[in-house]
Image (tube, rainbow, N blue to C red; front, side, top):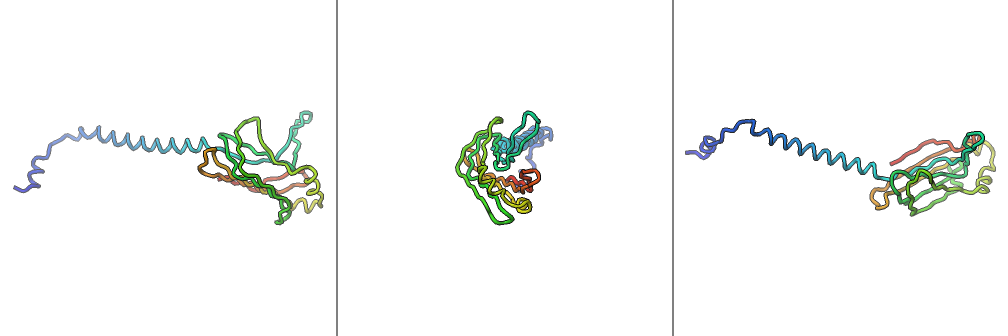
Length: 179
């Protein structure tokens, strides 16, 4: 007798209903693995630091307006502590750099009521602004940040390009990128 015939003839006659628990278990395993993937990516996105720069100003309590302070840059950190690998502020006239400032290896913690800032100094800013209105309009400011979580890992980048508006005595955003 042929071996194949013996196996086929002795093949157990099972009802398809007996395979339903196996199919359910496989589907549950696939859904669980997909859930783990989504949870992991969600956790990573929600527990990373976010750092950005903005124009600096103070609130005038009498007039209920914001008074711009164009010689200062405010930085903010939210969500998680951050290790600032490098921060660089470059002010250029047309394409020629006039002022460059760089800081490295800073640790900052998130707090809604605190920020840190960079100021070039009022006197240096007055010297920088001691130009014609046409030259002031050609001023641009580039702010670049590289940062990571405290334990290292992925390095994130932030870049803000601004131009100076002499009429408003404030920097206006041209482009903003975050990676």
